[in-house]
Amino acid sequence: MHRDDNKLDAMLERVLRKMQASQQSGWLTIPEAAAYMKSTVWYVRRVCRQGKIPYGVVGNRFILN
Image (cartoon, rainbow, N blue to C red; front, side):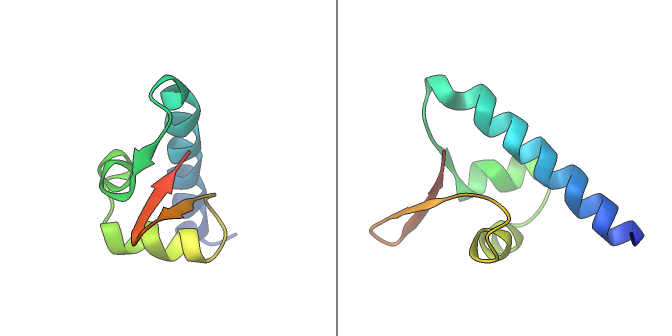
């Protein structure tokens, strides 16, 4: 695995843990996930579209649960 792949996997793991921990509130927004990952909103949107992070769409907003 490349170094970038390891970084991506680590970031995705953090998001998934955060999503599981936030089950009481129910949902994470893209900006919340990006802040948690110390990443950009655009990056989170891209990995959602690639199917690496499960998400839903409400109107024109991505939400992660």
